[in-house]
Amino acid sequence: MIKAPVNKIISFSNVDGPGNRTSIFFQSCPFHCLYCHNPETINYCIHCGKCVKTCPVEALSMINGKVVWDKDKCVSCDTCIKTCPNLSSPKITYMSVDEVLQHIIKSKPFIKGITVSGGECTNQHQFLVELFKEVHKLGLTTFMDSNGCRLYSEMADLMEVTDKVMLDVKAYDNDFHKLITGSDNDIVLKNLNYLLENDKIYEVRTVLLNNHQQNIKTVENVSRIIKDKCIYKLIKYRPFGVREEGLQFCGRAIISDQQINEMKELALANGATNVRIV
Image (tube, rainbow, N blue to C red):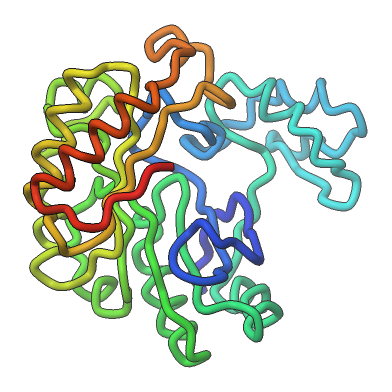
C-alpha cells in the first residue's frame, strides 16, 4: 500500500484553482526558495528532538529515536515549527490513498475538485496517480500546484490523470533562479512548454521581488511564451512568514503598486490576455 507524507489538508479553499477545492499539502521540496511562506514543508523530519523540548502541551515525544506527534494533545501553536532548525515539521501524517479519499468524500458536495500542493507534490508521483484516478471516479477535477522541478514528459501516467497544472515560474534568468531557489530553471521552462503544448496549463505564477530588472526579464519572457493560453498571476512578495535567511536576501520591502501595474501592462502588451495581480 502506497503512503505519502501529508503536511495538512484544507477541506475548503477558493485560492487553489477554480471553484471551491480541497487542497492537500505534501511534505518535501527540492527547491529551497528564500521567500517560501511555508518553509516547514521543505525537508523531512530528521528526528533531532529539539521540538519535543519546546512543545508547551507535551504533544511531542521521542519514541525509539523518533519524534511522535499526538494530534489529540496538539493545540496548533506551531512552536515546534518555529523551533525546528531543519525547515521541517514533526506534524506529518503518512496517509494512504483511501485515507485521503475519506477527507475528500466528506467535502464532495461542496467542492469542484482537489488541488495537490506542497512542498512539491510531484515528489509523490505514484501516489498521485492512484489518488487522481479515484478522485475522477467521484466526478471531481484534479489540479497540481507545482514548481516544475521534475520533467512532466517523463511522468506520462500522472499527466494523463491530471486535469490542469498551476505552475510557478520563479525567474526566467537561470542564475537568478538558482540564487533564490538553489536549483536551475531549465526543467521548469521545459515543463511550461510541455503544458502549453498539451493543454494542461491553468495558470502560471511569478512572485515579484523588489528587484525591478529581474521582474522585467521574467514577465517579459514568460508573457511572450504563454500569451493567451492561461492565466498569468503576478504575486507581490510579502515578508510575512519568510525565514530569516530569506529576509536577509529579499528584505522587507514590497514592490509598489505602480511597478506591479507596469509589469501587468508589459504582460498584456506581449499578448498575455488574462493577467491578475495578487
